[in-house]
Structure formats: structure tokens, C-alpha cells
Length: 347
Image (cartoon, rainbow, N blue to C red):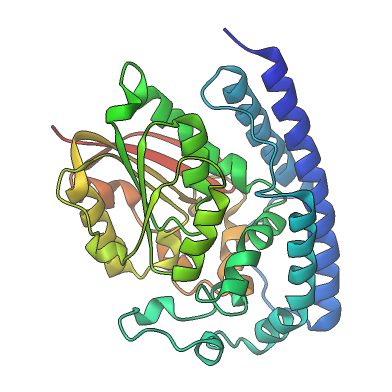
């Protein structure tokens, strides 16, 4: 049975969220251009019009509200904290913009090494300024700003894109006792996905791993008064979980920031810790050829936002990658600028 009130509430919240972040996106983009021109780049492939982009965005938001109405997960109208805290983070993001614009103009992505002293066991591919953000992924300031930065880039769609992962999880959980289910989120970052899962499944055993201690600290705070998840500072190339110990493994927006050989290592590790018959839920950027007329947008992204491994990811055969590790894809869908793939591990 559809709950029209929950659906209407989520629709209203999503509409406001898109409007709010669209305004912030416009303001930040204009200010960045005035501070320092972005690197010159002309895509060789077609790009969507603004109307096409927003039609797809609102289609995602409608599907999100419909899933809430169907009871697959509860409404979520939050911005990750109080309104006052949200405004403060926006102010901090705006204050940090001149440094980001300068790095983008100079194509300088190594300032993280001046901001912090990276631990010697951190891989080289991780210790750089992804998105040209100050401190890369290694400072408390970066962890505070990451979510508002990404939501500004994607017009407020990030939460709805992540929540698309809850649909295959809901299908897997049908008839199962959540108290007996263990879920691992690989590259959990600031814990937004873990929070969504906890709200939908309060009794499930949740674990998140990430290389960044500041981002894990931010994840703890984002869980608020919800039952906490176990958060571990660890490399996804060597997941500190026993083999066949997890019923569900999730991974969002990680693979496009990994070198090709590391993507393979992480996939093998995800398959190793997953139980036979378990569910692997993958969400990341859409890829070349996924949507007619959109490839030029994917061409421009790594140039404008420093994503050194994105071009390789954009043409990666994910189906073959997952199948080689024993994970059989059974469903795939686009969610605005992201792609969801759900896999089963063979029994």
C-alpha cells in the first residue's frame, strides 16, 4: 500500500533541496569564474542541455519519493544536521573557494601534503587533492565540507542517488530478520550511506571502512542518536573482515577514484568477505555510452575537478570486473549522474 503523505513529504523536501542547491551551485560557479578561470576544455562528444539535465534530476527525485511512499525506506528531509550547522558549513565552503579556484587554475593537486603529514602506509593514489578540495581527504576541514561540496556540484541529488541502493537491499531483505544481517560499507567516507541504511534497518549490524580518520570521525557524528555502526580505518584492498562474514556489501562513489589494478583488488576483497548468495550493491558515476548525448559531460568532469582515474573508470567493463571476482550482476539502472549495479555472489 502506498503512503501518499510520506510520498508528498519527500517530494516537497526533494523539490526544495534541488532549488536550494541549484542556487548555491549558481553562486559558487559564478564566484569561481571571477576568482580564476577554469582550465580550458572543449568536449569532443555531445553534452546534455540544462533542461535535459534537470528533467533527469527530477525523474530521480520522483523515483525517490515513490520508494518512500511504497515503504522501502523512511522519508529523509535532513541536511545532515541542524539548519544552523548547515549554514555554517556553507559559509566555510564559500570561504574556501578562492583556494580551490586557484588550485584548479594552476592544476595543483598536491597541497594535501603541505596541509598534513600523510601516514606512510597510505597509498600514493589517495594522498592528493581530489576535486581540488583543500586537504584532500585527510583533514577535519575537508570532512566538514565534503557533503555540502558534493551536493552543490550535483544540485542536491547526492542523497537520492545514494538511496537508490536501498531498493535492491529492500528486495534482498524481504522475509529476512534484519537482526541476523551484517552489512559492510566499503569506502564509507562521511557515513551518509550508513546513516540511510541505519534509518531503514535499525537492528542490522553495520560496519564501515575508510582510509581517512577525519572522515570516519565525521561519520560518527552523522549517525547522531542512531545506533552506531562499527567504523574501521582500513584500506579496502585488505578488508579487515573474515571471509564470508557479510550478508551485504555496499560501495558508493569509490571506484572512479581508484587506479585500475586497485579496482580489481577491492572487488576481489568485497567478494571474499561476502557470504555465498550475498548481495553486492555498487553505485558510482555513470559511464561512457550509458546515456545518449551525455558523454561530453563525462569527458569534462575529470578535467574540471581533478579525477585522475576517472577516464579509465568511465570505460571500465564493470560487468566483467564483477563477474571475474564471482559477483554476478542481476540488475542495473541509472540514477541521474550515477549508475547502480546489484550483484549476487554465487552459492
